[in-house]
Image (tube, rainbow, N blue to C red; front, side, top):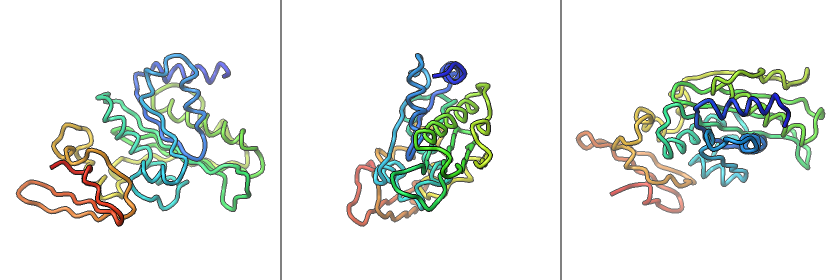
Amino acid sequence: MEAALQGIVEGIHASGRRCVLAITGGGSGAIAALLRVPGGSRVLLEAIVPYERGALVELLGREPEQACSAETAVAMARRALARGRRRCDEPRLVGVGVTASLVSDRPKEGDHRCHIAVADAERIDVVSIVLEKGRRDRGAEEDLVARAVLLTLARACDVAGPDVKTLLGPGDRLTVASVSPEKTLGDPIDRLLYPFAADLKHPIFRIFVEMQPLHRFLFHQSSVGSMAVLCLCSSKVLHPRSLIT
C-alpha cells in the first residue's frame, strides 16, 4: 500500500468514527485496506459481502429492483447503519453500502459502474461512477472502486484526502449527491421505524428480533389505543421470530 493511501486509512482509524461496510459486486479491497493498517478495530465494527443475489435480498429484507443502482447502495448503507446501531452506542456511526458491476468473464451490455453510499444520522452521501468500457481489466476496476470507497469514507470521517474524481480518466463519469435520510425511505418498515432510529431502546424496537428475507410481505398497521401492530407475511412461511409476544 502506497504511503498516501496508508495515510488516509490511518486518518480513518484515528477519526473516532465507527463503521459497518456492506459491499457487493466489487470494491471489497476497501475492507482489506482498512484491516491491513494496524488499528482497524477502532473503526470497523463489521464488514459483509452479500455477493450472491439471495444474500443481498437477505441483507435488504426485500428484492431490489436492480442490484447495481444508487437506490440499492443507499438501502445497503442504511441496513449497515442499523446493524452498527445494534452493536454500539457511538453517535457518529457510519454505514457504507457499495454495489458494483465490473468486468466479468462474459460481455456486459450495461455500463461498468459502481455506487457508493455513506449514511449517518444526518445525511447520506452517494457517489456514482461510470467507468469507460475496455480501458481497464477486472483488477484495475476493482482497485479503483476500492479506492473510491476509502476516499468517500474518509470524507465522511472528516479526513483530508484527494477527491474521488482524481481516480478517474477522461472517459469516466462521476456523480455526487447528498440527501437527508428520511427522503430515502421507500420501504414501509423503514418509514415506520425511522422516527425512532436514534433510540434503539424505544419500545417499538421490541417488535423486531431478527428480520428474515421475505419473498413477499404484507404490511398492515392498525391502532389499538396507542399501540401499533405490525404484521409481516411471506408467500412461503410466516416468520414469528420477527415479533415478540
